[in-house]
Image (tube, rainbow, N blue to C red; front, side):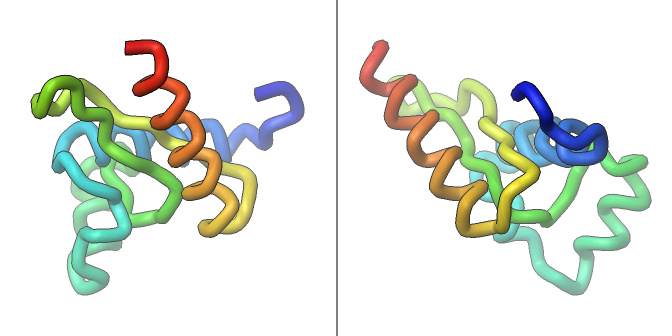
Length: 89
């Protein structure tokens, strides 16, 4: 996204990777392991909110990660993007 902060791009990528890896929003990762799993994966897995898994015909196909906004804004954008993808299929 034009004007996105560098670290937001990195966190959005980590959010998408997390959703794609676990098949659910990253915020579902227990708080007690959030920092440990982020450290163990060099930041590639996160429990920051703002992502959704992408399922196609019941199969996990990837993830959407959004950053720069508040958690609620990021989730709203991810939901909109997921709906737009679904409308294209």
